[in-house]
Length: 310
Image 1 (cartoon, rainbow, N blue to C red):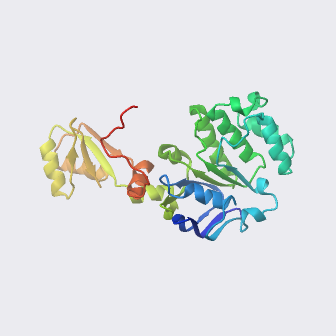
Image 2: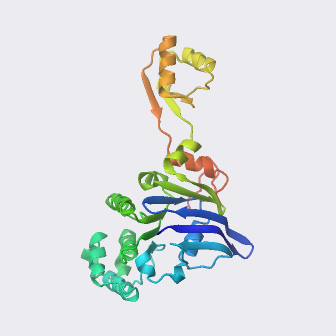
Image 3: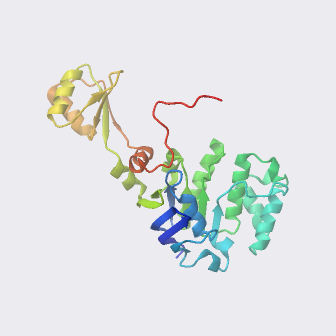
């Protein structure tokens, strides 16, 4: 089974505990979003999974084996942790050829992944001339080189233009649809919501959530109904009597938290309150994430303040 299994994983750097007793499984056939504020331990965990660092205690295995014990690591796991890793003096093609030779991967795969990632036309250019988006595509090409069953991607859409963002989103979902295991770290909640099936959320090195995305959003957000009416005070009175706490903004748009659309609609009909606009507001991943991780961020800005320009 090509799962990623993290069990009681702890990593300490001196007196700092970057990962603290972490346990979760990333299963094949789904895209798992790996979320958490800066300093939550996501990068450290991925490095531990890939054998780039040693745990203080606990284990991180791939298909039941430590990364260092895999017979063909590049054919088993493809990873993108740093898009700047390719040496600037090499061409994109040369960089991939060296990786292919090291992993005993047929050289034809080099041209295949260059085409797949859309950088075949610049394959003979030195990577120091590449934009961030081009370097990102090269890093993804390197991750795909061994046609691996497991992909670990850190901020894969970083630097990509809108077309590239759509492309990587569809690629990740396609790979998961083929039964592969896909773990994706991202800070972009709106983007994660478009591709993730499951979420693993960290905070200060600890596991905060390990759940299907839809369930996560429902658990950590409240339903909302928004409406407009010419009888605001009557609406307030009726809603309050039914146990709601409605609020209204400066534009006259009312918000009823914890209510369903049909409940508010029936109340308006029952009370004879004219409704000019009525809509349910779908809860977002961003709302749920912020609700869960409140107080977990390493750095937070004061509300209503701005940093003066230098």
